[in-house]
Length: 428
Ligand code: AMP
Ligand code: GLY
Image (tube, rainbow, N blue to C red):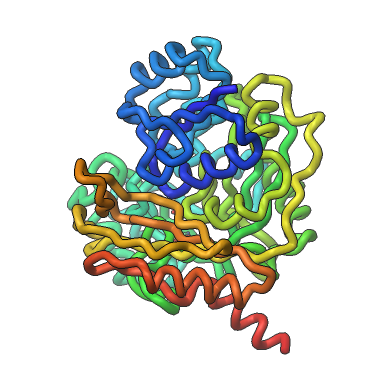
């Protein structure tokens, strides 16, 4: 059995690690991969978004499965092109990926499906956007409707901040095409939770709820990032929350997408806000979260490979049992390059301590120089997951390993899981 993973971040390293654990005889390829993935897979220097070359590679290597990591190749139609060549692929069509790539489409489907989410309206001119802000009042959220690499969402504490965000996107074109239309959205109070479901378009299996840390600095301060850490399980992600999300959010969403003629198969990521009125959707993504994946896959007992094959082959998930999880705790700490997220500096030499058996150092933005040395090569450099029998121990082991990693100007949060720690302290 031979599989190809598309992408080269920490999420893809975790996927590669899990698939090899599910089947140690699996032959893995990655495009483009990274030095960490290279220890598990043959990395091929093909960009994941170069659809033509990806299809050529998958066909030439006669792979039995392609797993698509990031959203960009999905938006570029890589899953459609692979399936058109008869290559079993885990990942949604470009049309279904619209739930992530177009916030307008996502809202339309959610409203049609009756899925609980924040009220929102769309605007292409400054005056009507300001009018909507006046109606909702502050706090309020301004979002670019297109893909803006995590920079398209501004949570505004005041009306003046909302006006400034609207001006930057609509008047000054600061985000280009992605910001030529904005959503003015009701602010939702609550705690966030990420819930993933593996789906064939109809059946789905939920994964362990996980919490991400989007802000750069400890205590959830500073700018938004792709994610600085994650942990699982989350005490507030109870079985009843998962059931509620499955019946009120995931099932109706999949149904509405089927009705529109763009069934979603692959990984549906529901970004939830746990409000006083129940779970509401902040956003959907069409792929695994990064770094959430690095936290949950080391806890997964069931075979992810079997689930991927069931979806990609077209057999469906009907015969796959609900996923089982280790009764342990995982805490993932991201190490980012200096300058991240605005303008990360690359090329700094990395020294990694020897991990103990609780720690896995997933590579994200790393590269190997010709002399064999490891250097930074992206905004998020590493994602360090520690798995332990207690939450505190996992948190300590993850932060300790992160503290021992050396590269110039490394940035990381030593407080990943702080909400969980606070909850545990209150409970005792
Ligand atoms: P998004 O890219 O839509 O996930 O937004 C990025 C982050 O902004 C989310 O993870 C939330 O922390 C915050 N956010 C987005 N929309 C809302 C909302 N309607 N209410 C409160 N916070 C939000
Ligand atoms: N960590 C958030 C995301 O993957 O979108």
